[in-house]
Length: 76
Image (cartoon, rainbow, N blue to C red; front, side):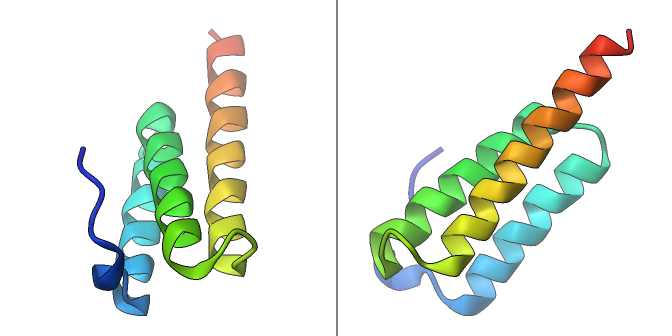
């Protein structure tokens, strides 16, 4: 997956990508969701700075997806 150029990372694009990651998480695709959240967080940091709250939200989503994936694996 290629990273988008920094100038294309609008608020609407951030929201769309967060929704894509959340949808993957809801569908039980935790690995995919974690990857989407991680990439989004890195892209936000690159454009808006390391401590942008949206990047932190994305990384929290990544951590949640990883936890859910681990719990799902443990239940099998």
